Amino acid sequence: RTWNAGSIHFPNNADDVGYFSRVVDHLAANFNADPQSVFLSGISNGGFMSNRLACAWADESQHIRVRAIVPVAGGMAKMKIDNKCIGESKRWGMIPLPNIYVFNQETCPYETWKEAPSHFECEALKDLPAMIINHAKDVLVPLSGVVGRVKRDSWLSPPVEYTLRFFAEANGCSYDVDDNTEGRTETFRRVSEKDTNDITTCHSLQSCRKANTTLCVSHKAGHNWVREETDNSEIFIMPSRFFGWLMSPFARTFDTNHEILSFFAQHRKLEVLE
Image (cartoon, rainbow, N blue to C red):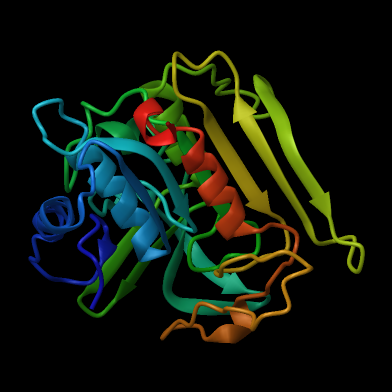
């Protein structure tokens, strides 16, 4: 069972956007929650679903308003599977992974992905503060994108830069298509005292219209929830029915919980703070 998040889901016709809308309505009616102050976050399929909800609730006619979003190890899964996006078989070291393919950015550039037939529309999305968190060692949702087909199941995860550029355009930010180091300010860097390969960095795009847009990457982490070195609690590892825990290396240079809550706190309505 997964959320119907677009091209990252297994076949189902569940109206999960409708489900979450009813959840918000229930919370507003019974717990004095404000449907005009919704914050979205989730990991993996939950990250993709967060992006879909942001699109669904972007129309001003909606009674729900999203204030900020932080997808973790997820992306914008709006494009339907297209053979032109399928590259060579993905490998774990020298071992080819069956039915898992590299996302071919040469034959499926950003413009093709954006204009392709979609599972859902997102034209109304604009000025939404976004902090995108992905991990360099993630095999399930790699930075470079992936396409998978297993029996009737299929999914397409675009390159992280596609998702970032999508939010950059929605938020009116500077985005250099030829050099992804231009127009970005490093706002966070932490190197582990125990492992110098364990580095997390965050870069914010410049000249955004209203909403800040940031990409954070833990360079050692796999498909999991990164915690800081001082956190002695049990390490959370996202299991996978395809790959298992061996393909989910962990890192300890980013307090994901703290950073998400801090980001959300920046975008609460003024009356909430008073």
